[in-house]
Length: 148
Image (cartoon, rainbow, N blue to C red; front, side):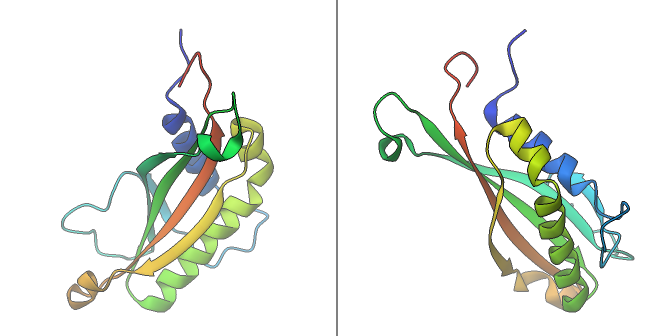
């Protein structure tokens, strides 16, 4: 049976990392609920922060790696929703902690670490009483010729 798509393996590794939020022994700021996908419409009332992992895009990096090496940069979005900005920022900090705490596991699974990137506040939901931000996370992956 062939391996899962490269992007699916990235999602699996990141989701496993995010699902550690709230587990001992890390010092978590929140107990955010974690799910794969995008926030629903309407958003559930944020009694506690929610974190959603979404695949974004894949970019070729092959030209920079040299002849015979094929690389992809796989981007994912981590949506963070909360009742207020400070709680959203605390949940974002927990997301980054979870990724850093799981660096060894992610690197073992993907042969590369995951890199947290830009975090942007999404102002559109503030009138509805939500604080929403999106963290971009990326992983540079060798493209396996037998199982891309």
